[in-house]
Length: 346
Image (cartoon, rainbow, N blue to C red; front, side, top):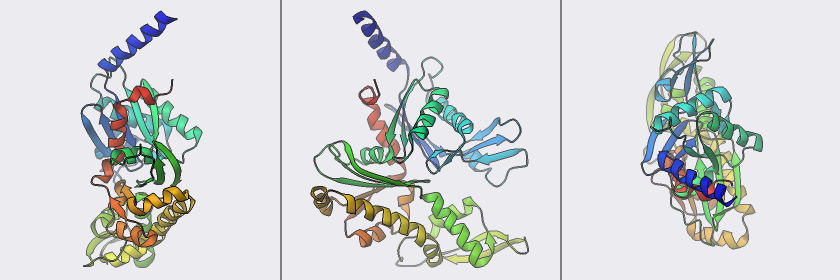
């Protein structure tokens, strides 16, 4: 038995030397890949283009995103992740295989160990689906990390201290709210509202108010260009193009940041309510820590203008946007990779 244990340990060290441990932020909107000792080597949209009949992959990532809404009948461009979880297992597996192969140059010799960040609110069935997809895509071992924990590690919060740290991670499909202390999650809540929901709110608003039909890419561009969560010092405007819902012809109109803020208010209100709910359920001893430490924002959705102002007004707490919100979760998985053997299940 001792010989077998020593052999297993020796082989583990050899495999670790020959392969690259990989951290993956498998997001609804974007997938980021962190390779141990190299940093983030890949950041691409979570989009796959497939042939409709054979289901064979035509393109993955940025190339596939360019095809959204512009494909011929024999090709479908889709997002295999929805609300932070797998919606299409076969396509997700193909996407993971592409990203793992692209990130790991020696995968053909020794498959990599992979740490994947997942929403805190996913079910056990969904967790198994992510693990199995990663294994079939070429991973040797798979560790699943809760996204808010990975985000907190990625932005450098002192989560090992006996004091409260609050992270709000707004991704493409979910908003994760968590209070952490002593390397553990004291409270977490996940709602399936994120950047995609904000985009859909813009699409619905413009269609209802102007009878103009726009696509996902246009809605995202509007959100990034003139979107805000609170009034701006100088309001913005932009011209947008779409299809008239009545006559069916192309149409251009000008829209303002005030209108987009109105379109986003319901979705943002749900995010605010989720944060307030977490604060109400926080133990009193930890609540007092948050008066000084406040809330840290992460995730691509937290880049919305004036979001910190909205949350500061709603909670009365200091709110700090992270320096690189889109990469926070991926950087957190990278930190975990430094001691991945300690995190993996025995």
